[in-house]
Image (cartoon, rainbow, N blue to C red):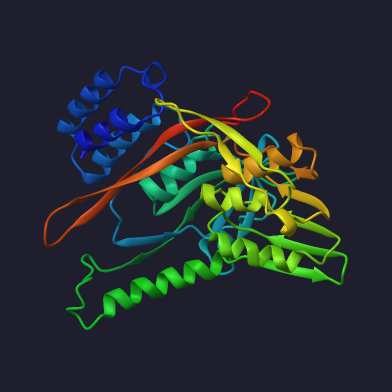
Amino acid sequence: MLKVIKEDIKRNYYDATYRGMDLDARFTAADEKMKQATSLGQIFGIIAQAMVDLNDSHTFFIPPSRITKTEYGWQMKMVGDMCYVTAVKPGSDAEAKGLKVGDAIISIDGFGPTRENMWKLRYLYYTLNPKPGMRVVVQSPDQQERQLDVLAKVTQSKLTVDLTLGDGGNDLFNLLREAENEGRLNRNRYYEMGDDLTIWKMPQFLLAEQQVDEMMDKVAKRKALILDLRGNPGGAVTTLQRLVGHFFDHDVKIADLKGRKEMKPMIAKTRGNRVYNGKLVVLVNSQSGSAAELFARIVQLEKRGTVIGDRTAGAVMQSRQYTHQLGVDIVSFYSSSITDADLIMSDGKSLE
């Protein structure tokens, strides 16, 4: 697995110097550490660390899925330079322990959350190695710091999932149902206020071009649009290009792509007579990343509208995912996300 991931990086990473890192030496050291590992969790951590050392938001290891589902029962995000609790699930251990919305998070298992390490903390706790609980130090307004041991809700699932319909299709049906539930959570929502305004909450850039057109058709008759990209982590380049094209009567260069080979610039083609000419306000926060950041920055650079909110995530690279499998009849899937280009905008700067 380590060797496969290394080859993914060697063949596809946008910077042939690997940001100054000695790739061979780094993976040789990782291989030596793996010989001492005593669990799969340790092995996955060693592989992940070898990639995290590149300090690239779009280059990381995606381990095989686990047989447990972990729900922490609370959410957090950076606001300015501080991290705060933004939601607590009713009935969760977090609520029982007294965690409250608005609490400042001083540390999580000894690590102080910052803008620079937040993506690594999320990667560790939500993707690489979900924990059965966290020890958090928090502080409510005008109160002393307090330490809480907050337990997660851990649900056990099947060790092996049958995708051949040999069980009558139950496993496949359950997977599809989970995907549908996730899709409902991430659905696009909009609210219309007469002829004056549409508010569009766009949770991610994962719409087909036709779906973008359909949403903009709903907006077309309104005088103004508030596009809410708070919490939007990005998504597909094609969605970004289509959406940008709806706001300009000319083609717009989103960014130049800087990779190992010469690459064509990322261009958004105008939608011509379907362009929206009303007022535009874009909302962003610290969890607006990638394509969401690019859209907001284009609006600023081209003076097309107003961007309101916090400093965004600074997670703006172009990447591809490479999926691999272990086994033959019974297989386990793992992946690597590899940056294949840095994006340089019209002001000559990268948002990463």
